[in-house]
Image (cartoon, rainbow, N blue to C red; front, side):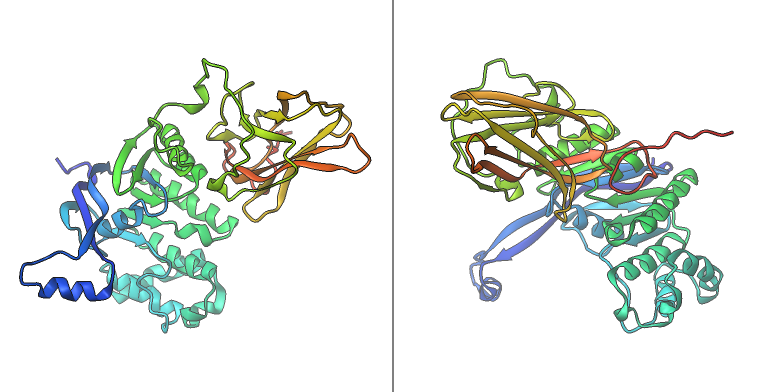
Length: 422
């Protein structure tokens, strides 16, 4: 029955023909024996799922996994190679930034254009125009051609139109990533009012925080296939973190941070940089960080895929030294994607020596950082002589994903206030 189903996707497949050279397309079309010169690329491969009315479903996956292709087929922008999509209700979508807008039209003209595309008359859109303009809040720019808009203004206007034409189904593809914090907050407040009104939301986001915070279900897509559709949103985001960190051989839904090594690890002096995060590594390497884990658990064998703001974390260094070192210093920092240092500390004032072979040194601290994606930087130096000698500098050694439970907090530091009413 479709009575309670807003979107039903059945065995959806989208295949693109890839040619090594442009001339191969012509050669294939003219070949008398129908020789193929192309390779089939499956952007989507036999994807099936149902979304009930009133559900908010997040779609996550690596770049190129097929997320945007799926949304474009659902909204009718693309046609599938095979399979079917059934939707029930008026759909409003915000896919690629500015899709459907005419760059030569003013903002006002584009508002009416978008209304026409979803079936509203000019008179009906007149009744909605004030609400749209108030939500977009871009001032007199609405009377200017949209080609003069910044990406942020474009997003504000496009989302204001999409969300204020009273759709039954709202579909959004990463469009909120260009908005500022205040605008994103306003958009997600609208999401919540949509949820309360029983409307359906389907959106793509690379933000683990957004998926966990706003979705009651999550779809994980990998290499064109839907490999998970679950109401256990947090676990699905764990699985996503596994995939984006290139652990494709790991069985999904197996909680990595709960794995315990039954056999003591054997460490060598491998100094290969972490290519997943484009790590820069330098120093004499007389002593090296052979392994670094960041976890909410003491003595963790691997880093947690997702960390929670405000909770204690343990940073464990497995250090291999080629000789005894009487005095070393370790420094660590956490930086955002723009390279801004958000937190840092070091062992200055604490006497640390290394023995030949394996050494273990740990730090613990409260992870008072806001939700987001960060990078861990670590450095170690020999200070036993007058001139400091860099041993091993690992600049962006690993990615850190943080979520928080304080939904409307802002800034860099997670320090929720206690509220007292007198």
